[in-house]
Image 1 (cartoon, one colour):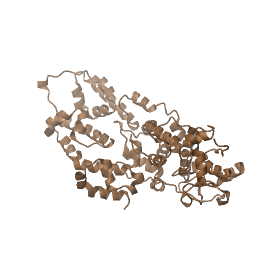
Image 2 (cartoon, helix red, strand yellow; image 1 turned 90 degrees about the horizontal axis):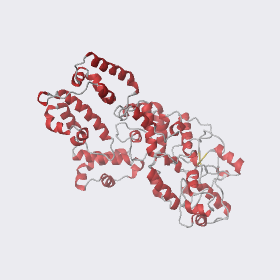
Image 3 (cartoon, helix red, strand yellow; image 1 turned 60 degrees about the vertical axis):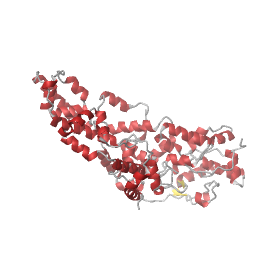
Image 4 (cartoon, one colour; image 1 turned 30 degrees about the vertical axis):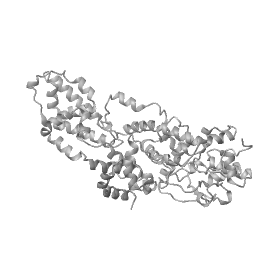
Length: 510
């Protein structure tokens, strides 16, 4: 047990507290300090998080649990709300008992990532206040977050500390020293200042509040809820990606997103905005989550308030299995009135007759409020099969609409799935009819010809999806690694190698 320890200040990185401990302990060799804190001499200090905190907690006489160290004195809370719950628990266990570079890879803190910080940052005003209050400055965790360039408390631009990790020994802890600090506020005009300041404050919210009950799954449900509120969910529960993209760009502007390494290529099916708004297994940087949350809500507190109460499910119950687009409520009401009048004025009309005479109204209600439609239509009449004639032109149009919607859903699937006639039609219950009657369904046939993938086309899309997924470390991605991750055999990969190589180079900016 340590005889004394430099208790960490509010929001001080544990790295900084250990740096101060080394200074006050009188130790000359940093290995001695590392051994006293972690029980072994082979630990390499890391600024943002670290590890082996269970041992440190015991060495401190359990004055600080490993959980307190992790959630109050590292930057893990910046990432944890957006991680799968099981993965997060594994990361926490690893930090407690080990600590390794694999943690940073799992969190997306890798070379070439989003707004990577290569220095220690500080706020001149915070440092001055710390010196007045405690007699010394310290490293604040809120100033080390990727993508954050303003102090959330004072709204001034963060300064780089002149000493970097690369300038000192790997085992050295850097302590903030007054003589190296510039405590004068710089009067610099910053483009998009209000947006940057809001980002800084929302990022600090993640550190300051207890969000241990929040997980990626709950965040996704909130995204769906607020997307619904903004009218960005289609009736078939898919997101109106084009409308979302246009409103998002209008909110931030392309130049601001470029500053934050968060440009959006709308034509890329795996651009970060599409990935973050879908139920994807891919990692998305917390900075991008904050951009999305700030777009959806006026206040981040509103987003996380009562997050366990799944309001999105309440919407589903109200509308049963279908969502009604906010902008078309009047249309829905009007079409219902048309159908009801038709039924009342034509007591002898069958369901088919209603459908044929009021196709526009019928199909709209079928898509957006099917339960209401079927509850109000005339009772089904059994028709003698010998006299029943199907309008295959009409059936063709119906199938085409269903297949287009299914195609959108399949494109969002992870892992990627090959677009085939069977995958499109089987779950819709129309595969048998299509296989038997395809020549009578020219629109459907043409659609299959346009979207169904050959084995080679599917392999190309699968390989591109792998490349898009590893955007945080794209510079180090090798072609053989793409092949391995995509699970494509060597003989088959040779046929598509040139196309994949070209795509990889484009993504790497070569």
